[in-house]
Image 1 (tube, rainbow, N blue to C red):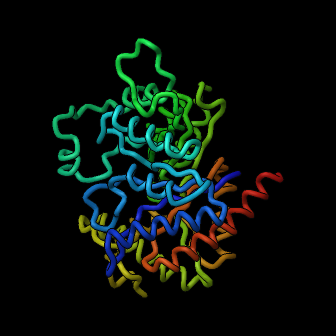
Image 2 (image 1 turned 135 degrees about the horizontal axis):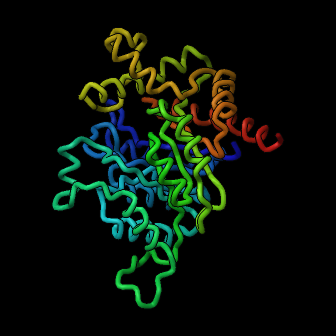
Image 3 (image 1 turned 180 degrees about the vertical axis):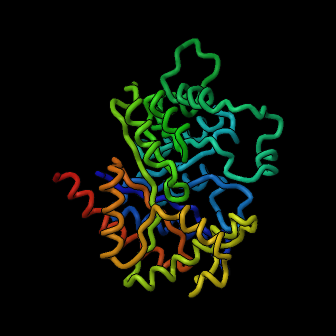
Length: 335
């Protein structure tokens, strides 16, 4: 692991607003930049009461304008919700405004429920055209020939780096086939992580975009001064995820001392398994657990994420994580 990055969902906390969430996102991005994070990614989710990043390209522009050097991008844009040309124009505009700093990660899922997906894609075919859409989108970022019928303006010639995102073998195989970097959503779906890494690396085909495989894994993180404090702070995310899993999404809850009182045992077991690719605890614990993940899966880059109700505590958590990740990256480069 040579680089580390941060994924933010712009969580809207209980007692707060979407405006608070977006202010916190920019503040977090500035802290991430100061602490050595390589990228700051935002994700597209719709009809989620506790997530403020639905208009992902708009938030990316806000963050990029408010920072100086950190790469800013989508982790990701759910491409089935959009026409590829529109995304090319949006990210071509971002890359024109902030050259050399914009990433575009693409996902195949709708990022929402069925009814909302229908509202987003009204009038569009329901067929799975994801591979073709990715290829079309890539073409819009290239230098357009003189006789091109359709151009992304801005967009053409910007060569925005495109990533494939996934939580199964499908995305790994597509990224390998196209010769693109690949990011796995192990922070909430770790079951197929090892298989996806193997499939991606073993079948990768070099391309004009990438000469060799580049794999990024995602991991949850919640760090504090003590293990006990970190477990308490993390309860907000566990509770939010449990409510989402049971069809009751809401604002990011305040932390609780006993999750077993709030969540039925079978649901809690499922949530703990889904969020198991993570590190929670004191600086020493987080360093050890993130180091173990890096040693086991050997990612080229690690993307950490975590939702904490108190913004100051969230800043501190990612500061602690950055110190641990710097040590791990330095050790990896020295090896």
